[in-house]
Every structure is written in structure tokens, then in C-alpha cells.
Length: 315
Image (cartoon, rainbow, N blue to C red):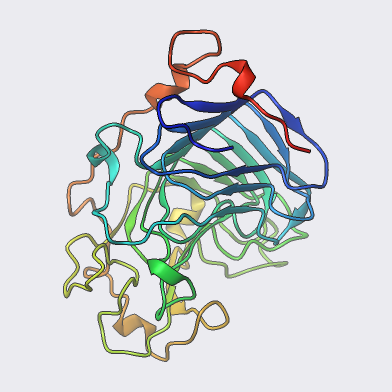
């Protein structure tokens, strides 16, 4: 799919069951949003089930299912942007067309990356149900592996995280390897296996970095400016989360990225509670309208959707 300059581009009501890659989205972030809704995606594929390479879109009411649970990267979001433009958290996305909104979806069996937020991505992940599936946000070099700063910003709120299998590990619900945003009002089971012994002592929220230089590291957890701030003006907000996971002794852990982008011998000196992450709405974040207004669009109405002749199926 390619974003259109003056009309919404929509993919709706398709069942993808094969083993090939299913959807990739390209275009300019300033073009009109894309809408991917009410589809079924088989996540046991030979490539990427979904790849979003541009900001400004809505992905809602889809099913993304790995019948055979997988740790492979099946839902990747690397955009062509970096940190040169200001963030658009919550209601600061005044048009609702700057960020990528991932809402009202069900995800099952994607153990590691659902999604894998990467270079320049602006992500709002809300009102989804995650079953044995987790979220990763890349950070930028040199404190993590991604070029261009990694994930630009993220919001994860009002989601439900469910743990059902003793046969597989998910290791965490949310892994933040850089950047900042909001993790709020989610209902979280413990990330441990349900039997408490097959895969124990897993954290629900994992914060990591490499630290080859002095604090603050560019693009590290808690930073929202391309020039690192000390102290950061928008530390990562973590508040209002419920469920057994939110009362776990391992609810939030701070560590070294290690194989995922370098090491840090003293990560707690770089990612501190009260400075780089806070357990309240310290900078007054306000969410964007839910449901996203573009959810109301339907084919055949005079809403600026591309006509059927512009829909192409590529084998």
C-alpha cells in the first residue's frame, strides 16, 4: 500500500492465511492516513506479516495470530523519519493523522514483537488484547541498535495482557530500549508462565540501554529531544496499571541491553525512577480521542476514500 496525497487508503475485510508476507505500507508521512481494519493475519509466515514504513495511519479491529507461537519479528515498524521533528504525544496530534494508532486488535502467539517499534515511529497502542504476545521499542545508537534514534515516541494504554501458555516464554510484556512516552491503565497478568515455574521471574516492563558515554545518553529511556536533557522534560510515564503483573516484584526492571545493542555495567545510574521514568502523569499527558474518528469510515461513503479501482492486489 502507498499513502495517497489527498484521499485515505484502506485495506479491510481480507483474510490472509498463507505463509508469505501480507502487508507493507509506504509513502509520505504528510499524506493522508492509511486504514487497515477488520482483517485476519496469519503470523506464521516466512517474512514479515505486517510492515509499516510510514507514520500516519490507523490499524484497528484486526486479528494477528500465530497458531504456532513465534519469537520471530513479524510486525515491524521502521519509518524513514528521525527525531528532527517535535513529538506529538496524545492530544498534541491535533489532526489525528501524525501518529500510527493501533487499537481494538487481538494479538496471539507473537512472543517478542507485536509490534517492533523502530526508526522514527510514532506509536499509539491502545485498547488491544495481547495473549502471550509482547511489545518492543528499539532505541537509537549508540545506546541501542537502531539508526536515526529508534522509536520516536510511544503510548501504550488501556490494553489487556493475558498469559495462557506454560510451554513458551514471553520474557516481558513491554521492552523499552529507548525514547519515552506513556504506559498507563493497562491490565496486566504476570509475565511469568501461569504455572509459576516453567518460565518464572519475568518482568512486565523492561527498561534497558547500553552506556558507552556519560549520562544522559542520546535517545535513551526518558529522552524526547534529539539533544539529551538532564533532567529530561518528558520522562517515561508509568501509572494506573492493574492486574497481578502490576503488583509483581518484577513489574519494572532496569538492565543492560547486552546482545540487543551493547552493554551497560551500571544501568540503574542511567535509568532512574523519579528522573528518567516516573510513576505518575508528571507532565500532564492527555490521550487523543478514542475511538479514532477514522474508525467511522465505511466504503461507499463520501469520505475521501480511494475508489475500488485504486485497490490493487499484488501476489
